[in-house]
Image (cartoon, rainbow, N blue to C red):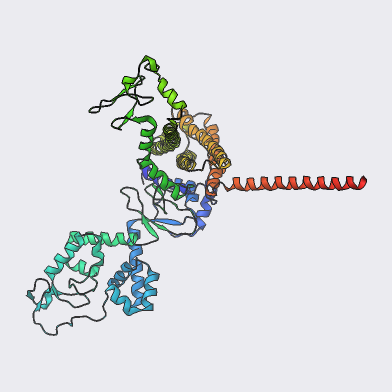
Length: 557
C-alpha cells in the first residue's frame, strides 16, 4: 500500500474519537487480537499504523464493502434461498429482487402462500403453453416466422420466441436502464419473469456487462441496510446495523457521511438542522436580504439601486434615468441647499420624526441584522471547512514526504512518529465538529439566553484548545523539519503535542461540547431547575422561620 492509501485508511476511523470505547493506542493491540471480529474487507493497514487506529475500528455498527464483498454476500443470499425453498438459483434471485434482497421477507411470504408469491413474482410452476412433443417448426410470437425447435426459446410460461427476437428484446430493455432486472415475457398478457440465465445465454457481451452491473448495484440500492458511499467516484458500499444512535460512518475512500441523511458527517448536530442550514446556504433568501439591506427601490421603476458613492443624488439606470434623493426618495429637483445640501436631507429628517419612514427603516434594519447574523455564522462555518481541507492536505504531505524526512533528521523510527499523525487526524475531526457547531448556534433560539451563553462558552473553550493543538503541529513542527540534525527539544515537542492531543481534544473540550450538544444543552435546564428548587426551598424555609418567630413572640407577650 502506498502512503496515500495509508492516510485514507487511517482517516476512515475518525468518527470514533469521542466514543466511550476510545482508548489510548498503546493498549489497543491486545484488545484487537482478542475481538474475534469478522473481516469485512477493510483495506489492510501497515503494521505500524495498526496500533494507532485499532481503537477507532472497534465496536463499529457498520462495515465497508468492496465490490467483491457485495458479490459474495449476494451469491450467499441467493444460495441460501435456493436451498431452503428448493428452487433454482435463477428463481431465487428473482424472488430476492422482488422483495428487496430481504431473505427473511422471502421466507415469510413464500411459506405463507407459495402460489400467490409465484403468480406475483412470475415464477410459474406449470407452463401456460404446453411444450411441443414432435420436431415440427414453431412460430415466433414476435416476428411470426417459423423456426425449428432448437431456434426457439421460452421461459417458464412456454411462449415461443426465436433467439433473434429474444436478443433484440433483451438488448432494448437493458439499454433502457435498471428496469431490465424486472424483465417479463415478451407476450403482453404474460407475467412470467425472465432471469439472468436468459441474459447470459442470449445477450451480447456489452449487454451482459451492463446487466451484471445493474444486478450487483440492486443488491445495495434495494437493500434497506446498505447504501453506496455518496463520495464522487467511490464504489464502496456501507452495511449499517441500526441501534447505536450514531449515524456517522467513514468510508475507505476517506469520506465521512451521515447514514441517515447521506450528507457529510455532522455529529453532534442533528439531520434536520443540517438540512435547514444547507438549504439556507443555497437559497435565494439571503440574496433578497442583501438587496433589502443594501439597496432601495427606484421611486419610478421600482428596480433596486445600490448606493456606491457618498452623494445622496441618485440617478437610475437607463431607460428610467430618474433622479432622486437617496434618503427621502423624493425627486432631486425638489432638493438643494434649502433641504440640507447634497449630503443631508432635512425633508427626510422631518418625515422620519413624523413617523413616515418607521416601517421601511424597521424592515431594512431587520434585514441588515439578519444578514449580519447569518454572515457571522457562515464565515466561521466556511473557515473551519477550509482549515479542515488544509489539514487533510498537510496530513497527506506529512505521510508522503515529511515523515521520512523527519525520521532521518531526528534519528527516530517512523513507527515512533505516529503521535504526529494522530494529532493531525484529531485536528481534521475537530474542525468538522467545530464547523457544524456554528450551524447549531445559528438555529439556537434567541430567547434561550442561558443555553446560548453555555453553548458559546463550550464552543470557545473547544476552539481555543484546537487552535493550540493546530498551531503546535503546524508551526512548531517546522523547526524540527528544517533542523540540521537531531534536536534535544524533540522529546519535549513530543510530550507537548501528545498532551495537547489527549487533553485539549479527547478528554476535555470537544468531548464536553459533543455531549452537551447531543443532549440539547439539557444541563442548562437541569441546572436552572435545581436553582429554582433551591431558591424555592430557601424561601419556604425563611417563611417558616418567620412564622415560628411570630408564634413564639405571641406566647411571650
